[in-house]
Image 1 (tube, one colour):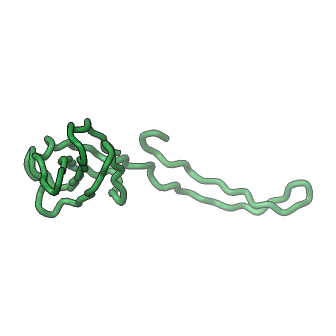
Image 2: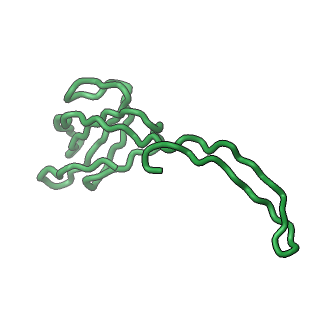
Image 3: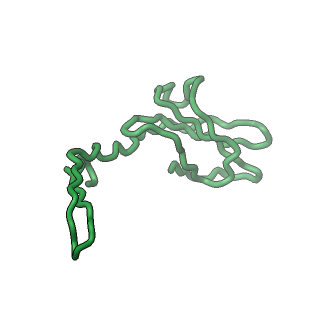
Length: 112
């Protein structure tokens, strides 16, 4: 989620631009993704790749006119845990009923 401080005025909406390319400090590259028409002061970017750096810019829009872009912010998405490995299934029995015992080697990584 990206959040920012509101600008003063009525009828203000915001546009968020984001990209894996750096653009300039105050201007996104031409191919940056766009979320527009945002009426609040936050937006959730979705469809991002894990463990990837994204450059983000926000701009206020009023009556179809755009203000200057914010200074870009750089954020890296959460990389997530590694894949579980060593999965094994062993048939067994508990209290006379057939069961399956599943074991695995846990993932590694931050937050695990």
